[in-house]
Image: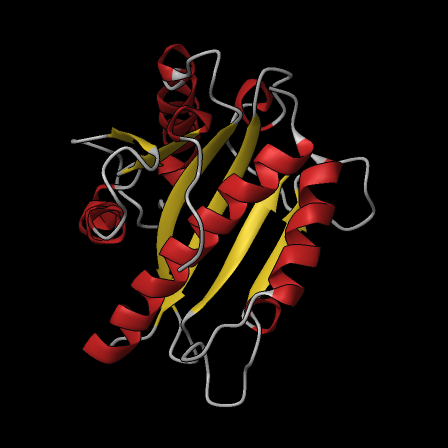
Length: 197
């Protein structure tokens, strides 16, 4: 799976959506102790799509929960990895959401150079099953989020949303777990390359 990351440089948060906590534990259970710092949200929010009359409350709860992450980031944390899981029969695949331009560029280069056997039958590099998507609203094509800008665009650290899409079978889930681990390790190394200590 690649080299080690400075333990103090990456904080991975799991369980923002309670249905995804088990996946997060499975992914992090395969990393060496101390490889990354972990923040587990034991009673996260529901990840189901809110009904129209629930949208305001849903957004407000998400914003409040994300703002509560900020005190858990130490000065040595350069990267906050926000791990999520979704479903896609064509998976496993992943989207990486980030506002930091130098980290996006470094990730794109690293994905192109990193082999990923098992990501898909004909896929040979991580770039073929992982997309890097900007959160920067100044860009013509970007993702929008309910996450507060104080989290996804913070001068003290880079935010990286990692959404891993899993097929609904055990073998596909296992490949998705491996994919998530590789992405976390790769992101940690990329952050060390481009973000100030």
